[in-house]
Each structure stands twice: as C-alpha cells, then as structure tokens.
Length: 321
Image 1 (cartoon, rainbow, N blue to C red):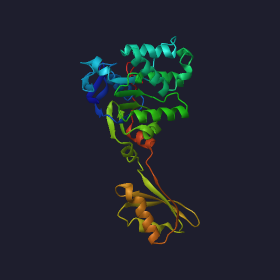
Image 2: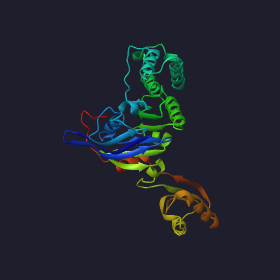
Image 3: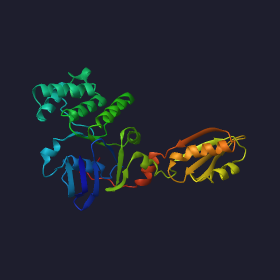
C-alpha cells in the first residue's frame, strides 16, 4: 500500500534524507523511529505530500504522491503531531466540515461521523468548541478526522501524545483492530509503543535507514542480546557454568551474583533462543540441581535504539520535528 523508493530530501546544499526505501502492506503496523533531527519528520511529510521530494518516488496504493496527489491522498488518513483544527468550531462542526471535504454527504456522512465519534469516545464533547478541549481530547478529534472516510492507509504521528494511560490503551487497541484491514505507519518516540502495536520497525538516523525488521529482531540487536537468567541452589557456580556451557544451545554462562546457598547466572544462546530455556531446565533436572528462578530476559529496546542512532545533527527549520 505504501512504497518509498530511494527517497531523498535536500534543503539547499544540506541533505536531510539521503536515500530511504521501505514498504508497508495491508495488515502491517510499521513503527517509524528516529532521534530528533534524524530526518523522520521530513520523511513523514514527504509521504503525505506536504513536502516535495528531491529525488526518489513514493506511491500510495499505486498512485505517485507527486504525479497523482489527489488519487493518492484519497487513500490515506493523516494524523500529524499537534494536529491542527479550527479552534472556534465545535467538535461536531469540525467533523462535519472534515467529512464534507472528503466528499461525504447524506447518510454516508452521518454514518461516518457517528462511527468516528463512537470509536474515539467523543460523545461527551461534541458540542464544545475545540479551544476548550484538553490535549487528549484535541488529539482524539484529530484521529477522528483521519478515519472519517475509512481509508485503507493510516499515517499517524505520535498517536498517543497527551493521552492518559487508559486513553493510550484504548488508542493502541483501536490501532491493532484497524490494522487487520489497513496499512498503518506510526511515528513515535515511545519505545513501549513499538512492542505494544507494531509488527515491523524502521529506524532512521542522519537521514539514512539503519534498521528494518520486526520488534523481536530489534530486541535481538541489544548489546547484551536476549539471555536466560537462572538462580540455582548451589554454593559454587563453576560446575554449574561448566555443565551449561557444554550444551549446544549455550554460547556462554556468566555469574551475575552469589548468595550463601545459591548462584545467579546469565546464560546466552548459541543460536535461536526458543529452545534455550527447555534445554537448560532439562540439564539442571538431570544433574539434580534445584533452581528457584528461570526466565528469559529480552534485549532492551532503549539500548538498541542508542546503539543504532548516534545523530547529533538538527534538522533545519523546514524539517524540524
């Protein structure tokens, strides 16, 4: 549904986005990450047709965003960060206006507005002017206008910004439900959002794509990687480590801590982690070593993000986040 091919953006002599390529298909939620100044917001603005490309090509549902902008833009709903709205309009008036410019009328318009109001829980503020709304409700109104015409593509910039924990949960559930029939891009700074709703992740740094894969693959790039933590009832760690390191599933075992009658170890997989826990448990049982904890620690996304992004550049005024 979305294809970006070797997309570039220059502001004068400065290259802000330097040849980024990716695609998003129906049923995918793509998490788009990057530090401030990395070119993320500039890329989002090119995808939506807000900024012209310096080079490359972007298509939405097969339509070139520059050659066929109307056809392309009909296919997506866009929630920008700090979504603009007419502050003196009521919520109902703004949604009616938004539906009209999407060429909805009559019963289709009424049904579309009713559906968006229900999905975004706006019933209680329909007749308030937008300037009286909290940040969270303002954001919900922006999301409602993005989904009014039930587009096959959603482009969401910080969709949970300003929402309380309950509202964030509701928004994430809504995105997950919509992803069954849509292609969705979520630009976010919140790493827990990646784990909660994204099926794939791309990270941009210094205008270049530095990662494209699943959240699990991103976790596996953590400096420490995924590891098994086990606490064994033993006074000496050496024989336990020696036994574990003989297992084909184990790359190494290292001591994390020692108590009077127990030792805690970190066990690193030699390959895929899926068989590690069962192999370690079986070996401990065979050697009659009791253990009081055994669990898999995933790589931390914030560690991976820091290791992949080193940009200290700042996007200029034209492309600032």
